[in-house]
Image (spheres, rainbow, N blue to C red):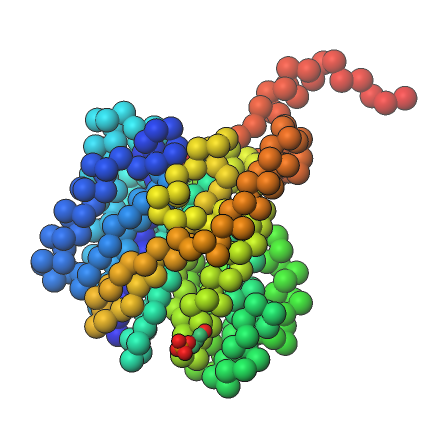
Amino acid sequence: MVTLSVIKADIGGFVGHSNTHPEILEIAKKRLEEAKGNGILIDYYVTRCGDDLQLIMTHNKGIENKEINTLAWNIFLECAEKAKELKLYGAGQDILSTAFSGNLKGMGPGYAEIDFEERKSEPVLIFMADKTEPGAWNLPLFRIFADPFNTAGLVIDPEMHDGFTFEVHDVIEHKKVIFRCPEEMYDLLALIGQPGRYIIKYVRRKSDNEIVAATSTTRLSLIAGKYVGKDDPVMIVRAQKGLPAVGEVLEPFAFPHLVAGWMRGSHQGPFMPCSYEDAHPTRFDGPPRVMCFGFQLSNGKLIGPIDMFKDPAFDRAREQANLIADYMRRHGPFQPHLLGADELEYTTLKEVMNKFKDRFQPLE
Ligand code: 13P
Ligand code: 13P
Ligand code: MG
Ligand code: MG
């Protein structure tokens, strides 16, 4: 068995919330290289998407492992110290608690992990986002694993023809439910169309219950009880040979759907697929970005990455995202560019209501 762990945190932005300082990446690389030397990890890759630092790691310790969680946590703490020294913006932003006891749950950082038997050839795709929330993966995951107009393999590959199951988490009530597709497709959609609350955590192949996709579901504002920056989730998807082809996994991102999380975590904007170089959101702190690194696993070694959205075939999606960004921006402080009151991360509404409470008169 090999475990693929993607653990991420915003530990300070350079400049503002747009990018990550190279010294932060260097610290993470150095510590993961040591962990590889000590035999804790098989392999690793360090990257960033906007102001979020991602640790991509392979090992044999299973998911939610204390040693791996502690390794990541200590790296985030050390990086946060450097971020404070450089006075990077929001230094230590995603470190929400100091009471760490070996488990990242409720601590702030996001994590997506899968444990599996490596196949003869094991292509994996790691998606990383900035300026959005984990529900942003709902639409593409549905299309990859349940929509035959996206994924030809659902119709023509006998190994996929039975369909997939979706484990959905209710992040408000802390409950989970599993839906079987295609037969419960409409029930699944009734929930995941509300991506602020219902988030797809795992997708499994129905025929053997093999986990084929995992997402991070951390919602920072629900942990902190206030706005502390956006969740900026990650997702792992395995591909090919009885699973969607790499191209079927990437295809939904040709449509830059609207996601929550732009500017102060409080606006809707198009989810723009882009290369590593362009995962650097600046316009109105956005628009929200998604980048994707592809790897071939070879006995746990991460062969790659290939920058999957660095393809002119996604130019049109980027162009469309820019048009949608223009259109949405013209709404200024109006919904639906602005999120609804229950989703707003950052708001003066309470103060405004308080200030004018005596001026309110009953109607009639
Ligand atoms: P190859 O014939 O290149 O293996 O491709 C098959 C496939 O899955 C393409 O989507
Ligand atoms: P991050 O969550 O990426 O730090 O962005 C915060 C934000 O909302 C910037 O406008
Ligand atoms: Mg930030
Ligand atoms: Mg971010």
